[in-house]
Each structure stands twice: as C-alpha cells, then as structure tokens.
Figure 1: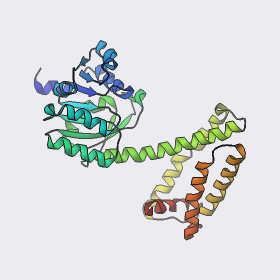
Figure 2: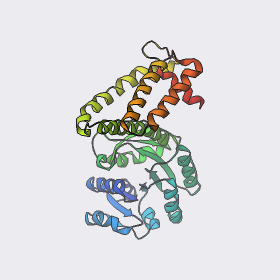
Figure 3: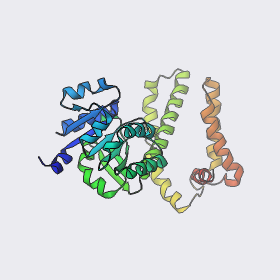
Length: 293
C-alpha cells in the first residue's frame, strides 16, 4: 500500500472519552487502521482488542497518520496535547472536534499553521450514540482543500456540513445550536419540576411536553423570514401579551414552591422591551434587543 493510500484509510484518534471511543470504533467498523492515544491508557483497552494500535505517546499518535482527530474537552486540552506532540505536527491535518469558542478555534488554527499543520474545526451535533448513524451531522470549517481531502474519513463519523474557510465558523454554528438546545432543555426541566410539584409525574407530563416542543419548528419557520426583513409587526403576537403570560407562569411557579429564577429572568427580558416602547410589537423584536445588549 502506498503512503497516499494509507493516508486515506488510516486515522489517529486522540481523546478516548465516550465520544472519542465512539469515533474510533466507527473508524474500525469502516475498515480503517486506527491509532489511539489517551492520557489514561486503559481507556484504549477495548479498542485495542478490536484492532486499534495504542500509541505510547501523543507525539507517536500524531506521527502515525496524516489525519489526527481530536476529541477533547476544550481547546486548552487540545493545545496541551498538541504542544507535547509539536515535533510531529508538520504536514498533519488536525480535525479538532471538541467544543470551544469561535475565537479559540481561530487561535488554534493559527498556532498549528505556524508549525506546518492544517486545522479543521468540527462541531458534532449528536451524542456518542449518534456517531456512525444515518442522519447525524457535524459542522466543519477551515481550508476547503483539507476538508475535501479528508471528507470521506470525516463522513465515517457523521454527515459533514462544511460552512466555509474561516476556522471559527463551525464553532459558531455549533454554539448557536447549543444556545437553542440548552435553553429549550432547561425550560423543559423547569416545567417538569412544576408538574411534579403539583403531583403530575414526569411520564404523565411527557406527551404534553412533546406536543408543545413540536410547535417550535413552525414558529421558527414563521419568524425567520420576518426577522431577516426586520418585520416585527404585532399582528399575531405582542410583547405585552407575552409579558402577561410569563407573569402568570411566574405566579404559578411561586405557588408551587419551585425556583422562580427562570421565569423571573424571562419576565425581566420582555419587560425591558415593553418599557422601551415595543409593547405592541411582536416577540421577535427581542432579537433587536439582544443585539443591542
């Protein structure tokens, strides 16, 4: 097998938490030669039993293959590992699939470029159980040539949604997705706490939570073009209506003995819009309020 052929069928995975192990396993299932490394060496045992090669050091892991996939907690952890492997970095492509800010992605991409290595930023949109599954997806950004060179390997893990050359773009798309995800999940858990405080088990509340959550896609489809056009007419909803509804929620929360910090924050956010003279405008006008903040 030529060097070029091997580079297309082999990969290094560094970081063997649940996500890293799932990624390494997916590569093994796809017939790749996989080199793995983790600070806690024992996490590689199962993968080694399946045919992976355990590198003795991060430097040896990086040296083993052209494509190096990082699955680490954040970019500080990535820099710590890459720093220890610095002599082996030249000519490598690092697909950094951990989470951090867009600016940190740009910093690490620059740091690698100074050492002769390429950087692909990744933002994986599925949990470990979704790795290798149809319909899963990850954002990528960085040099288009590098992305196309390694696209087949990256698509072993998930679908690959390339966002552009700017190394920060994949993390930006990932973080705004996470903003929506976490606020939605915290809202669900808060509502569940209210239900249970009033004797309604989570399982009984479940179908109603699903029904309410199912409204979100239609609302996003309705609001997005209006927001793009700067159209915040209060023809279907108004901030004053939203504030009254949130206050009713807040009073129900307090009467239930549940932490009221979340609805209080929502009420304060909407109240600022009303006090700014936008009471008759749509809820979507909060986009402008958030931008100014």
